[in-house]
Length: 65
Image (tube, rainbow, N blue to C red):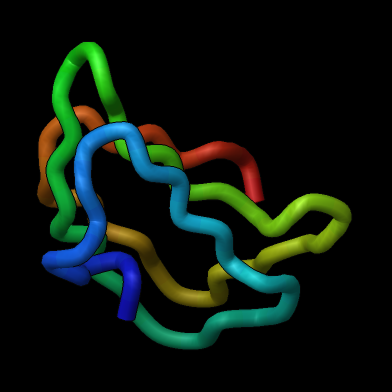
């Protein structure tokens, strides 16, 4: 899953496709102050996280889903 992928690097944006994601998810990627990682809904789609999202990395911005 992209929320914990070693392929995600500082400055990347993780797009989640629309839908309801059930369960608890941990985001364990790390950006930098200059190059944060952004997690957001794919443009024009709505994401619902029905459970929880825990962010354990540094400089990760979660944009309203």
